[in-house]
Amino acid sequence: MADRAADALVSKLPKALWKSAMDAAEAIRTASRVLVATHIDADGISAAAVAAVALSRAGQDPEIKFHKKLDENAISELRSAGADLLWFTDLGSGSISKIEGIRAVVTDHHVPDMPLARERKPGQALISDFQQVFQVNPVLHGIQGATDLSGAGSTFLAALALDRENIDLAFLAVLGAVGDLQDQKSRKLEGINRDVLNAATASGAVHAVQDIRYFGRETRPIHKMLEFSSDPVIPGITGNEQAAISFLVGLGLDLKQGESWKTWAALRDKEKESIIEAIRDVLRGARRRPETIARLTGEVYVFPKEHAGSPLRDAKEFATLLNACGRHGKADIGLAICRGDRKDILAQGIALLRDHRSALSQALAFAKGKGIVRLRNIQYFDAGDEIEDTIVGTVAGMLLNSEGSDRSAPMVAFADSTEYSETPSVKASARGTQDLVALGMDLSQAMRHAAESVGGVGGGHNIAAGATVPADRKKDFLKALDDMVGSQITGRAPRAG
Image 1 (cartoon, rainbow, N blue to C red):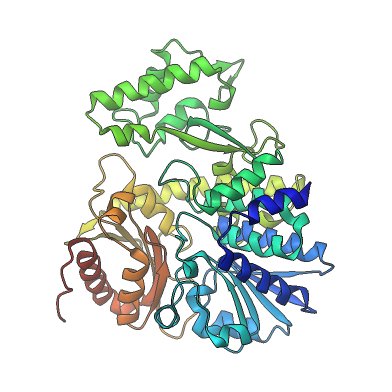
Image 2 (cartoon, rainbow, N blue to C red; image 1 turned 180 degrees about the horizontal axis):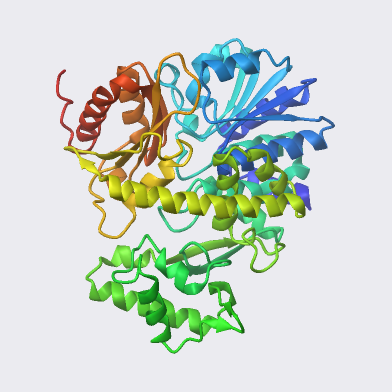
């Protein structure tokens, strides 16, 4: 059964991408000790879980290291760990030139660092890659890493190549893709993610359901779900708890079951349909575009083996719990949950999720009070040391999607870096919209270019990217970024100087 499902998936993959997964699997199979280095976000934690389970099944006792980024200190530490092979998941491609000389597997989906990318054609590997680094990355094969395959997805392909029995890990690749917001553009998973989803649904591990796409379907009271709604924002309701309650009561809904507030998942289908249609009416009355209204509903992903009402049952909420763990220094808890721990560890994860939501709420209020500065092509706010550098990117995205926001320019957020460096540095996180990407914006290139121009590092995806830059070069970085984004969107050459 597993072989048949795996064969069906493999038959749909680009041959060169599958070949890279097979090469990576052979390197893993022949290594005596593998150390996994992964990112701290939901995609990275999901990827680490895929790698950990695959290695355990292969008879290894894997060690997992979590990293915010692969800087020189992190790479030096990993070099000295004494592993026969380093397996980088959801990171590594942006630092390929820095890991030269290390025998490694990289299962990633970020844009490779520019020197390497310029030297190769899509799908073509360098001789040095065969000597040391085995890279599984959709970008190298002309496939979008921001929408078509996540870091967990690339890791899953390597695990599948290692053993067809690992087809049952497809649900973790779905979780990673949703955590990486790869379903946002089309309101569903697409590309290779779609094929991986089909494998997961065929086994019964995931149900893909057409429903409202707001966060909190399983755990939030319905009125709270609407109060914190975004994409699309509901005029007059988003951000207003009492207005959300009045709106629902006006539809004749009983919002409580006994003493408890009802959640969206507890509603009957007819009740859901009535709320959705009423929200559409509000959006139409506010003259929102049809494509904006369409974003209200789409595909959502349910893990049916999890208990109803658990944050693990809905993919968005599960991914947010993983982000809460990783962003607050407890990625190992998220990893344990992905691997099936449902006792004390899950309780710790849920507590971290509560703290995470509180931290985001306070950070969002601070950012709004601080004020946003608009430049010609970008907008930004500087949180200093008031917002953790691990969540400032999430806050930037929340600001961009809040009611009344200016969505005509990407949002850039600064926070003081908490990582040790010889000179003070700041973390910059940028978030855009699909409309801006359609106009030509590529934040991965823009952030990398601007950061390198001031002696920093940067990269990511076209719609979301990050950078670390010297604190005293912040203004120069902003100018370079503003010019770069302007040249991408308008076709103008960046201003000199």
